[in-house]
Length: 453
Image (cartoon, rainbow, N blue to C red; front, side, top):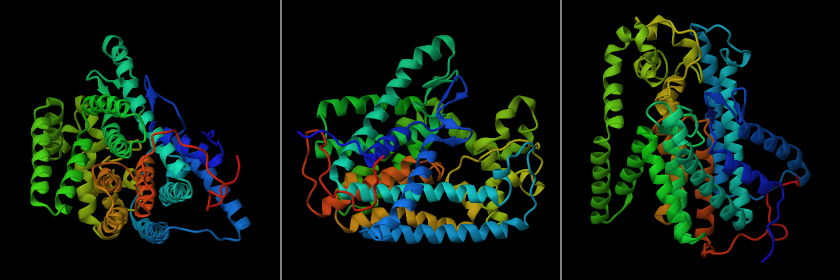
């Protein structure tokens, strides 16, 4: 067997598959794996885009692109242009800026920051699709790394559980509730990430790209971590994927099976106090928010989802078409128009409501356009008759965004690249099972410029 060739594309894929598991990682409330508020992976993406800009002209501005790569490039370019136009319209709003605000978080500049993050995510996703198409071993290698780093994150939660339980140290397990968060900053988004790792593991099992028993042991660890994360978002995302599967299958008994599984999952989850009580709080909090936010004992209600549930719906009602401007939520949330009688808050905040927060930022029409873009890979692959495991990979990104994940999270973009890369080989009947480790790429494997490190 040949040895693996560690060129720059392979290193780039290794870093991407690994660092997507480390969003906002903290130890004892000390943030690591980031520079200020910027994740290391975002810096790597910026470097990669700069390299492509330099190298692409050397190839006479020519490269072979897959059809979905071209379509997604056009759609996201149109979205960014529209978001930029709406950011200019949003400058007419009154802003209530927190003290100590950095330059890049001021009106208009914060929108450019969000646009830059999305641009880097999209370009990196498209580049990875091309790398997967150029060499199947790139695809298998990255799938394996993503899965086993996800399993490692679950094991990290288990190992640090005693430290949290006996000494109160916050690492992979945190707070007095002992929630598991792996290498993430919170249990909620970590649960969504675990869902993505489980879906990737399903592909590895189907294709026999790894030891079956080892992958199943990883499934067991991930399932425990998913329950330990107490993630309501993960519950909703998993349910959304199951509902979509039920709607798209043609056999009635298959639809009944998916619906029955979903109802059973909801019934079991409703018996978990940490989940049911929190959902009740989310439902009731907006009604009492103005009163509770002025109590010193209820400071947690001043920020995050509780505050967002109260104010985002007001923002959408006032600006249903143009929105308040991408990223402007913390800059306008103190407006009496939205906050009513709640207490003034002098710090940067995010509603943490995923697509609902995006709707407040961008307005209903552009948000619907964005959702349709995220669903494009699924319908593209469905028309080509790919297996359910691959289609579920394509469903992951719209599901996690609809259920609370922010657009600048990196792992949904990698999952979409997995889906389109797998779909490319499936439609070419080249997805034969590999039990061996990936081998190095052959000569001329990269159709997109990929310079040496």
